[in-house]
Image (cartoon, rainbow, N blue to C red; front, side, top):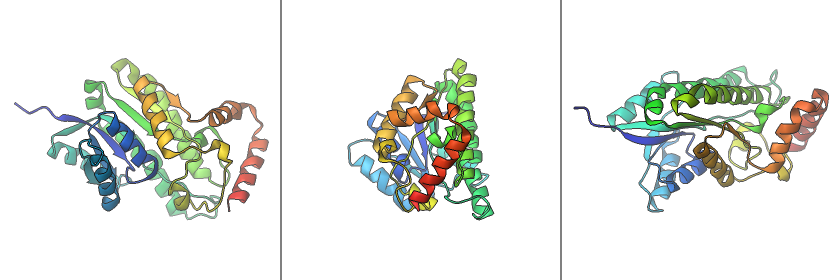
Length: 262
């Protein structure tokens, strides 16, 4: 008889920022974790920090989730350890600041691979187990998903995809008992900014929240089975008003913030 696999929460992009904060929140709420990212040393540091709190030490699984065979390799790595996800947290992703016609095309396509294709693949790769365990999927989108994105056109478009995909998946899977939540933070001070090329204060502090607060909001929303969560009242106002503000006004506002952030 095949032994029952242990349920785990799989978190991508868990080596820093929102991903590491989510790892701490899920661990504090009793989840056994598998942490996935490219940087093995940084993942190990997060796992050690969680273990130091008295929680079970997370499994570290270094992997580049943007590779086309990443989901297969992750599934095989989990199976060898007798593990199976009951929760998937798709946090891995990056952005690039600059006009689409001036940024490297290959980098922008790599952004689509990670932010869109890899997230979709991992959302679906373990779906049978998620249904059996009545688990959940937390996809990290962004307030950017509600807005046009001149100056970060491809990034904003990828987050619009994540939001739309997650909302539809929420509806499709709720009958099977699988919770799907899109976490849509505004600006969060992490190394994401440096990777994106943001060197100054691009957005008002009113919209900014810490990675820890965003992670707590995301965890709570998933536990409650909410379709979308936008951390911070100011960010929620932005998402509610965006459909009613003329696009020309939004474009000017985005241009102004971008010039201020360089």
